[in-house]
Image 1 (cartoon, one colour):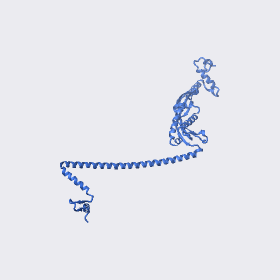
Image 2 (cartoon, one colour; image 1 turned 120 degrees about the vertical axis):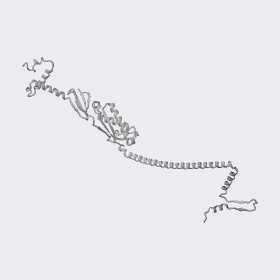
Image 3 (tube, one colour; image 1 turned 30 degrees about the vertical axis):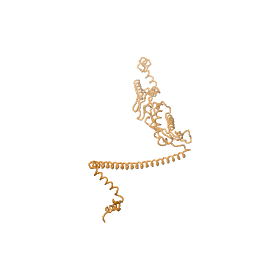
Image 4 (cartoon, helix red, strand yellow; image 1 turned 180 degrees about the horizontal axis):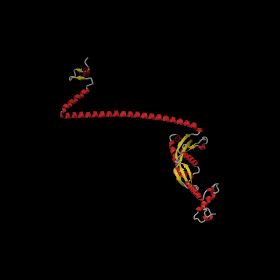
Length: 341
């Protein structure tokens, strides 16, 4: 070959480094394609450079707004990247797994076969309950690698753990509580317990909420349960009536007691006022008595006799007892008080 041929073995052996060998190999592979002999050696080198640039540019990737990119280097996780343009080393050095993290997933757990007692849940009062509920969950952005690599089938794990948690909570409460006012409390407890287990397992899952859909007795005893519910409703109705009657009676009693207390207080104040008046009158009389005892004594005697003889018939006997005369003073007073016609 000519000494001007850059692909000549003798000339290539004099070059330093391995770039010539690299391009030689590319050239030998490229010569297999039709029309490749039309390229000159310089043009082929330029093409190789372009291919190398394109190769490294192939590491640019676009992560969508609802995704995270999990970067693997030779199959091992190295980092997690967020939305936007990202760069990773081209294949086979690094690879990217795209995972949606904003979507809320739902798992419905229901006991469709009510006749199978193994599928029912036992409540705290030893009753069987057919319970259906849903678990809403999503992948945590900061733990997406845990979701991908720590569990082979995450949905199956979530379903099994959720059913176990619900059985444990239902087993600690009465059937009527689970069916009525305790639904919200049970949902919150189930969510917290399920999230705690997911964190312990490092599943990379966030539990959004747990929703109780249906709480019913088994079909074989549902009529009896409804009879019990009706009896309980009637019991509650009678209880409400009794409580209303009790409140009304208590209110009436409190009213009567208040009335009696007010009447007694009024009597008390009247007696106190009368006593104060009597005291004031006595003190006034006593002050006059100290000035003229004989006169006040006679005046008190006359007033007392007047009050004594005011409403009785009077018989006056003279000193000789020879004649008895009747003086009807009361009739005279009554006639004097009658209005003139």
